[in-house]
Length: 366
Image (cartoon, rainbow, N blue to C red; front, side, top):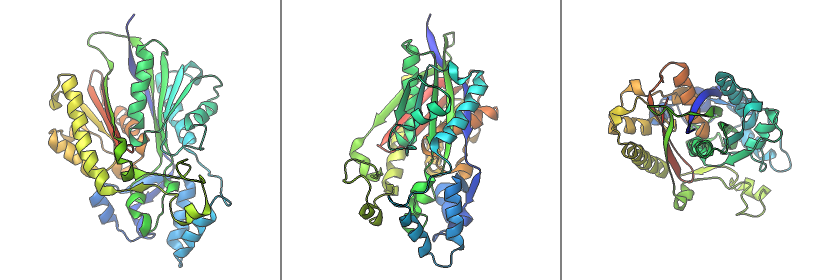
């Protein structure tokens, strides 16, 4: 019997705390108009810890107090987080399982991606597996940044096609807000990224005609461009892994060359969409729905113009959630499915670009 992987359930989770551009403007030199025009973001969800820190920072008459607080949370003064990426992943996973009519015990495998894991090791997927009450289900932990979910889909699909597993949970879970400097020094990244998780259940079902489920995957990476988007804390390329000097030198935070990322994203996303179309002998108008990684509305607008994609064939939620990295695509897909924007037999293309650089596209028939 020939099996094809199909998505049978979707789920998402975001923290309750909402940070709008006006709050950020009280912490750094920016405005709602400046952020929205350049990114399309009006608000984002962040962990309770980040939210409380931002409120203290916004209300403090002495803005240096914030930086003192950050440095006090160095290697000798850590404060346990009240929310972890695995917690968001757990909520999204339970929702996806419910929609698929399955229990965690039915899973054969978990594929999880997080840009910043709960711990240096083990991976967030292992923590999530334990929180699901599982004790022997295999876990694969990916670190492909914003492209992690698309990479995870391709891996899970191969497991199902090869007959190794029948039911696979694929999760993108991110808790990024705690990594950024919410002052002018870290403004370029801090206004973009946010927290959230998305999940899907993939099941191997008997293939019919026309073929439904995951049809093709197209993946690429370019490791020569890591300086444009990277983070070195916990990395073994520096010694020691964490130190007061590294924190004092502000080397503990992510780094991004925004212009380089934007130029590469536009180029690579355009290429990967065309590659997916060509591989399946399709034209842009043949695709019923596009789910683009919600990194920057300007990138999405370039794609919409290049491929003549009408608004009816996309769902953009960056204005509400910001850039949730590897959680972005599954969150957007879940909302599109729940809103009835994705219907039976629709051709759907999922597209993402992120650190590495890594980028990819998945074509599926719903």
